[in-house]
Length: 348
Image 1 (cartoon, rainbow, N blue to C red):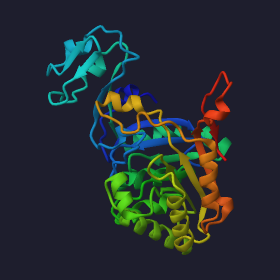
Image 2: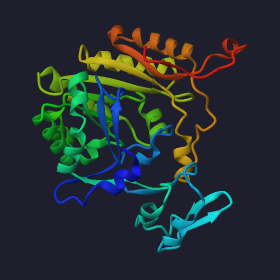
Image 3: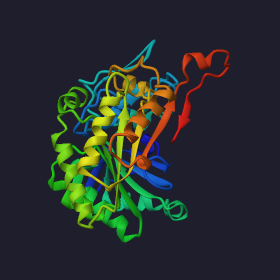
């Protein structure tokens, strides 16, 4: 669902509601089968490499898409706060003046102005995702709650997942793990699969890259493991580790995570996925008037990902659970003579 459609189509909630920024259909990367992924807005971390910067703030945000703009100036005319200016470089947003009233997004004829973030009521959201029920049934898929950090909106998330379980839909939660421990008791009883981020095992390095220590993250993960050992939900646990150049893309970092998994979650992790660095989000930062420290960073090579995956397999975990995914680039030597040195994709 397009962001402007999300903004325009949702009715004012009358009961419990949540702040979302996207509903992505036909996803194959957020759990088994074909899934509909619901992205909750607001995150407790601020990862330097974040590929969804619009997810960090819990509040709605305005952005301008240059590729859609026809330069008509309608948005500037209708803005009641005079917060928009049409320049030779495009629309400039005075974020100090902007009140996020949404007039510019509503009136823009080319949908170049968007409000990211919409409140959805529980019943409306359940109806929306159940439109895809046929895809779930045919592929053994379901619905994944992602973010941001969905457990920061735990009461709504719990009610949402419970409603889906009552409809026979497989549920998954994709989490960074940094949330109050009490949220687990609300959410996990209605969760089939947890996709859990372990970005860095060293607490100080974790703080440097994400703004927070990993103490709460590891505590919450231990709690999930204890529940699974007791035979209660979730039924399945996947670990995800972003592999980031000049940060987590080291054998020492990967081995440290693997040793922790082997010591604290023996036999409980069905899949450990190493997620290759993604550099396709730079335009998102530009739309939000933010700089991105990784904007000139190239993709990792396939050889690098294979080497780190091999380190993971020898770190104390079941080697069959280790996989890696994402776009990679070919080494310069192998690109020589090629007319199409495009990124390579793997889900090894």
